[in-house]
Length: 439
Image (cartoon, rainbow, N blue to C red; front, side, top):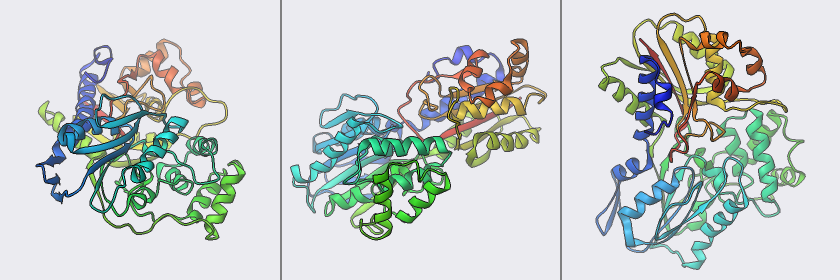
């Protein structure tokens, strides 16, 4: 089982069903399944879905992101010795023979990620990669933080500071990545431009709702439509402009003035192919529900916004549901944190607010909100699960729910009522899922 505390949590029929549904969703988007289902090699032609790429030269593999290690394992299994060499930045080691794997940090970039990013770029000159060669790029969520390479004059510490400020500000992933692109030598299409005239083929597992190629891992192999002006606007929107390091301010100002080159707006010899996304998991979950003989319906394919407000709106929808079945949603909320706050993550926060909003909902039901990568900001929890008995447990233990919510201490709240979902690192990343089961 991927859900490590499945048996402990499955105390009712609705909880058991919800956990089985989430388990099926995660298994459905594991990189091994997605890559093996999309990639085929016959010795001469690389086939990816309906695309055919005749290969005359060498093949190199680069990658970064939470799922890139498992993607690399599958690609190496399929291509074998045809791979000349490769470098991947991810969050754990994998036993690969032809691809070097660097273990790096997330969500705040570290020195290991920086050195790995330099290694990736160095392949071009070291191996004289040219127009007949193919670079297979394995991209997944988390890649933006896992492959940091700041622009000349900027340091990793500066980028770490900017990332930390954005993560705590409530900015969404598209906004965060817009800023990241404009202080990077890799993001915003710059990686593909670097390897030109070689052909670049990117296999992508999307963690961005709507699958905006420019936002997934900050779009390293996709033309960038955002600008330095956009980056400046976002930093000012969240009142961060005067908090970011002065050299970053100056870099963005110089970009606006045209003294620093913009990210590429067009690219040649590049193909980006999404092989899995959040909705892929939702489809697997709906399929599982039907296998269990249950009605399945998708309530929302793009759930976004601040966790409290999103939970309130979602619970209003839930209250209108009378038919028994499984109700699904996908997305990624945000949490704006004060300087002093408790422990938790967006899914734990979402579930905690739902506990308040659904405290008087009658009948048997359960609700889960889970991060597909198994890390809901903290590695100790993938998310949370509540049901129609959770409010009684809060009252029995005399827990001040509103005080926990005020402190953004959802982890300890859910821990007290045995409502944390634990998976550990799943090896994939396609945002979050919410599952509501009505018996």
